[in-house]
Length: 414
Ligand code: UGA
Image 1: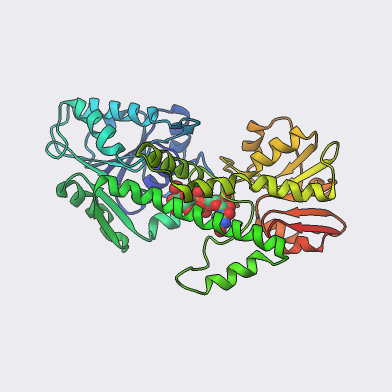
Image 2: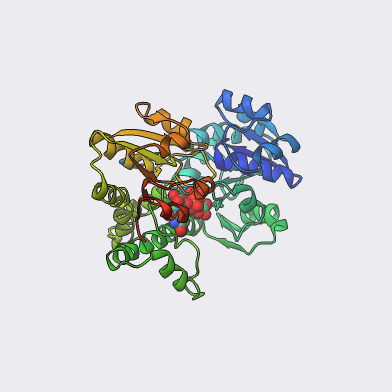
């Protein structure tokens, strides 16, 4: 099929490359000239396992011009939805839709616009369709509309795309859904066709549930720590029950990244706007926000941060990525700086991105971090499982067993 993807961020780029690999004719569009130029040269602007190789293999057209959507049967909207204190910022997606409406105006043939960006329930009906209809064309008659959320996990996004656990197609009408269904028919995954708003809610509820599992096990961890019990063992014992399952019960510093915290805030804001106070979800966020302090309290049992050199192992929000968005390292560094500590940090991939947020700390080798007065383990990179921690003071937020050989060792929940 002929597809256009608008937005060459994480989701857009991965989707474009994977759809192209599946023999679709794909055009990737972004107004960011530098980004498009880089991708056009076969270089991925983001770090993602397998992406560079595929980028060199598959035929992918890139463009900064929305006119290049003209002959596409399906147009995906993968524009970022950043958020600030007041909630999600819809301006980038609105601008993209307005540009697209300008193109729809002149199109004579039917195409389907698919929202893939994560948006609050109701957004496709209340915001996306009215903007597209500014073209003078009618949804359901002149063009189709779907909302098909993505379920890609950073670090294994290509695998998640190629072998999805489910495909959700929210459809304005049957005709729109049928076109998108055809695109996904070779994926061999359970496919659910539903309303636009239901699809939006499935995405948010899925991420809210994953976040809940993490904060739940961290709350259990707070009790285990006081009991002198290892939370990982408790989680293992719980996970044998297939109603509970072992996944996402890894207790530690909590969740970060561009999705779980933001999507959780989005669902809470939406619930409140509808007049409902989501106690559980508020609690999930509250537990997560307290994680950095849990780790620092353990540190302070052994060393006064003021004038001490504190070494951080890991800055990325999780291993195998250079992404530091909402990383738990951020709150830790902020608090340590306030307390007057000197901070040295090491991360195999994310140091550059983190230095844009905190230019005032030192970015050093892992050996130099090990030389600090005390070491905090913030991200569970595989290489941290093989370091020599003997003689050190280590406060572990991520369950690195080898670090237990340290002179003084404290695990956040074990
Ligand atoms: C998450 C979801 O897992 C994807 O399904 C979803 O598509 C994606 O958000 C999205 O909405 O785009 P991602 O943000 O890449 O994917 O990362 P996760 O693997 O979910 O990890 C999120 C955070 O939770 C990390 O900081 C990780 O360290 C933490 N985590 C995860 C735990 O603390 N414990 C666990 O057991 C699992």
